[in-house]
Every structure is written in structure tokens, then in C-alpha cells.
Amino acid sequence: MPRAIGGVLHARADTLLAKLRDETLDNVMPTRRSRGKMLVGPNRATQLQEDVFVAKILHQLRNTHHGYELEEHGQRDLLDAHTGHVSSAFPELVVLYVVALLAQPARALSGAWF
Image (tube, rainbow, N blue to C red):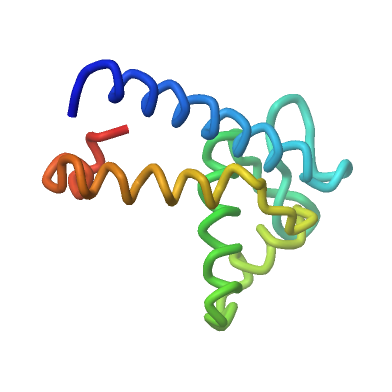
């Protein structure tokens, strides 16, 4: 794709990823945050770094949306720490990923496009 278009798409992806991260962290239950870490599990015994928590909670929200059973306590523990809010940035990221697949399928599938 032309560099100018690629630059715009990459900048937009960066903006959307930041929004997705911020909104996800803004919707952690207040008693589940402590000094930049998310407290999950029984007695809030497990501490997760913010970025790790964001990745795990989005994965679990996707699973529940698709109707997957929550068989492990760890799956429910993550969801218990969050309101369930999904950022409006998420669907736009999906559109950008489709553009990436069309523009450079090998790079998009390898995870190197964004």
C-alpha cells in the first residue's frame, strides 16, 4: 500500500489500541486495582500487570460472547474483576485488521502488520 495510507492506518491503530487499553483499565472494579496491578482470584491473591490483564480480560470477554463455558476458576476470576465494558474502539480495530489482511495477508497473519 502507499506509504501515506499506511502511515494513516498505523496511526489510527495506535490511537485505537490506546483507547481500548485505557477504557478496559477504567472499567476494572475499584477494589481490584492496586498500584498499577490488577488483583484477581480468591482474596485478590493474584497480581497481574496492566497489559497482561487487558489481554486476558479481552480474551475472556470474547469467550463469553461466543458462549464458551467458563470451566476454570481463573476465567471467572478475571471477569469478576471487571465491569464487562468493551470499548467502542474494538470493532474499528477489527475493520483495520481486515484492511491489513487485504493489503498484506502474510504480514497480517504473522501479527507483524500492526
